[in-house]
Picture: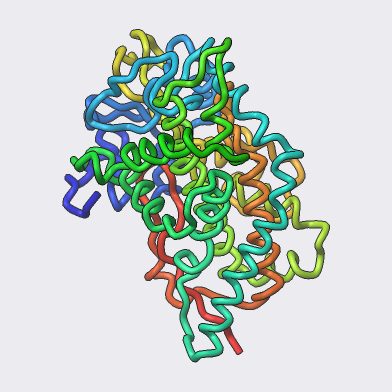
Length: 401
């Protein structure tokens, strides 16, 4: 994606979630549309709908007959890998295959299984913080904590779960950018995540271990081993969706704390508020907008939707709907009633939510102990990603005193 994308004439009739203006002004766009045009539409990407109310987003999320998960990232082209499996099961799978594909994943993402990763996540955060402290001691006054902290945590953890080289983190970040911020740019197979994972899966089938990739290589459906395409697609999902979403939530939480000394003080002085604060970070800064392909001509809210059109599901907008949340447009650090949609709604609710919560919690805990006082170096230098996952890409901060 570049700034050369055509300008948006009217967000109600010509919106573009990949445009830099959307990344910079998303919350204002959601609020304006929710009041004036709650289900927007654009001819871009071959026809795309954009609901902004919680009720409509929930309706689409739960209607698997009219809205297929065959495509979940909006592109100019429609996917050529049909449901029910799709190209990244289980997120691209429709019933009944979805339940099978999701069930395969539960062993590795149950609360008990994820709890075992806490020491590793904590050590990762502490190591990154030690590196930042060394930079400060060496005289650096401004440090990009997206590039030096939040973006490394889920990369390191996912590499460990899959037993992939930790030094491939830069490759993972490239694959994430390609899939979510530049999905329509042409590229050679050798430069794609498919090539990387085809080679990794082939090698792992000959050298099985006790990691998640080895588990998928040995899993079966009614006695039939998973297809290589299934294994590759599921791992691609974990790398792309499981990493960017989590580092975006961590980065957004730190961005908030950098600007709100009262919330920092509350976090530090009242540990009982921390679980509520974490859920409020997930609600207020939910990073994920999912997509569906409309399976049949239908209508929602008076809008005639054609089969083959896209519809986006901006869960962050649902989380700021005043019809559902009191003081929806405020960050309330001790919010008690908080049934947010940060991890999605319906059958596709994020299977990795336990891992994401663990990573966000520990990243915030370790950071706030190490750096109880920090602030944005220059708010104008903070940049946010566009597309379907929104979070800070550059987050320069300084440390007073």
